[in-house]
Length: 373
Image (tube, rainbow, N blue to C red):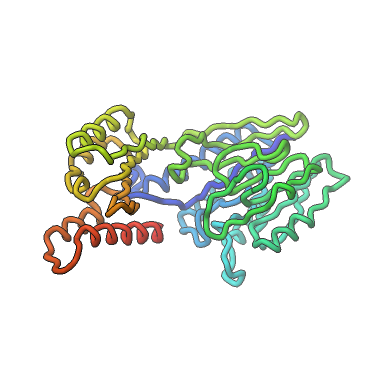
């Protein structure tokens, strides 16, 4: 009995301004589509007895028609191969108000696809395999759902599914709004396997419980993580990680500008960029302890030319102001924060500290960008 455990595909996710030349769509949206297509290709080839998707199939409660159509086409491919699929709702695809309705209702119309999304524990019988599925739910309901699990004595294998962060054996969480957290004591030892979702790194939490991780990279915290899914042999108690080809992320070593002048900082930036292969990658450079006067000397056009091979280049810096570090970022060179600084330099301001205004403004812009993501 083999199962393919996949999670956190976040279909519909998009980021940055790069457009895929072939489709005209956002490049990162296409990357996410490609990763899921690869997964389905491998599943059809490997022919497991079941597919378990442990949450965050979609990136949002209201995915686009394009994202929905893509998912339906891919799930039909799995169904047509005769492989049953159980998919639970994660925090990204669960509406806060039940009256809002769920996109998962559409999946009920595909034979062989078993969506579990109503906030309650459901048992799915697949012959020799019984799946105990717990979708995303709030604290009290989550505990109640987990306590409702009763392994079937008539089935050869009992498998649990859960979309939540696990704490107690280590902290496996994403620090997201609306995320659910459970103590490791809820990971029952009388289940043959527990397919976990929410944490984006593939890892073992307990001998019978694994996070499959996400199928693509969604933040620089995942830059060094390999992406894919887990192929589980329940009889042999064997788990194999199956990697997928995904777009690489590079998080360059942070530069400390505290004791650097403009020439030394430029040299350090150039050396960092020259030392890395940026081709088609998502790249971030961080500068710590950057003074307002040194910030003014940054040559953004020069950096833009140096990093043109990258799919996306992001500059993040901590701006010092009177001994206080104000975190700011420049997600696109020559973007809004650069324009703000340029405007402030040209605008006459009486009886006010321009450096303080600059630091406060960059902080507000950064918070605004984060809230709009």
